[in-house]
Length: 113
Image (cartoon, rainbow, N blue to C red; front, side, top):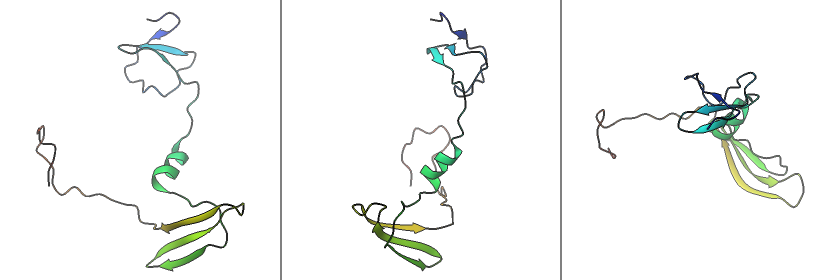
């Protein structure tokens, strides 16, 4: 493989971090991999997707504060042809998961209760 690429000598390269002056690296087992020239800040996008979803702009909707949570019902979008038929509940408490049971280490067991 190779050609114009540099061999990947940095075993700790994550595949996302720019390497100054290098456009491609020859990764063992993969071949030529393009090196990004900039590293975008995706934190805001990831938070919007996974942690904080935001309802679209609307008017003539209904809202109520119930059990310390904001509940938003429906409404009309920016153009009067888009009607929101949805319900949003905003809770400031982050969700958590607790594992009560798990298989033993290196167990072939795939289901557990």
